[in-house]
Length: 448
Image (tube, rainbow, N blue to C red; front, side, top):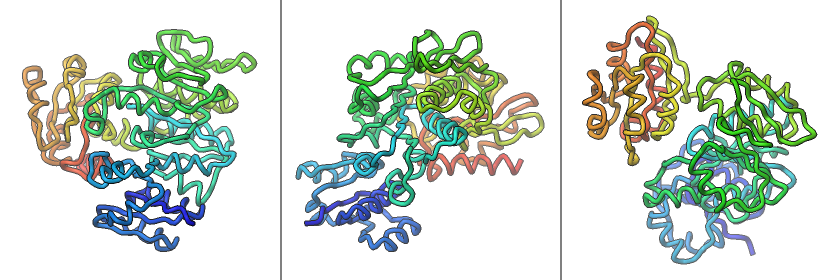
């Protein structure tokens, strides 16, 4: 009898899981409460996979042998409550993919800030190093779809906490945890410990043959490491300590050591293609991973010198009349914006705001006092931002669109200044997503 496999959500991960499930002989049905994109409808029809949109047929869903839940679906929804009450097994896309990975290896990267950049840098290192691999996961392309259509011996996977929530056996050979700060707490009942637990699930099933790369300077990671670390070989990175294995920075030089019979890699931090203290951490994490995969030191060095930062992550848009415009729309929490401001070396006009996820703006108060000459509030509800900074700044104003925000910032900025879009918030009040917000910002800058 065929395995009845229901997929909730017809986005990238849902359709990818449907294609892999169908390929593996499952009886697949996709159900989406909203409207599917045309490109996904075509893919499902071409594969002969049945689907529904605009609602869920609960009778059919509750007859499932197993359900793959797309990461964007919260547990509190009625459909998930019904599924949990029935006791049906629920898995994530990564659990499904792991089931059929064969001899392939997986590098899994998670964390609150910097995981996309670290993932992309690891992938760049692997490509420069001549490895046959794919970059998948939260960064954009479904790992299940990659396995179904073009399987690789190595997957470099960015994994969100939501994608880790429903794993059962998933085990990356190399797990990278860049940091843990408060984020997505609305999905975890505002319980930080639940979010921490989700992040550490990336090493839950690792064995003594697997590696765990983590930041020894991150207080949350260090506090909870004894609770969750079981068998993994640890490879920490730090700016404050000099671990016997892992990576550290001393006198502006990065040193990477992964085992005794491999020559240490050394590189001046000023040769990194990406700037800022946060990117020094990202480079250490990526460098350790590349070395652990056996990539030559000269190839790792070349990759770090040629890496181009991701779109919407500290992306240099243009310099107009001596003012630099930077798109950091991917900064959707306070710590991301903190790192962005910390890297600023010139007077900054900060564009801040959106859908607040419980932000504590006092986290950036000192940096605002030191580096920010004005804040443009980009959101429908900016009361918390005004309460935090009205008494600190003489320039603070509201904007209802990216164009209006850029125009205000342009009027305040002088030659030698920076205009930084780093919102610290989700984007759904005024934009489709953070990409749309970043793209509208860039278009507005081009019109100046």
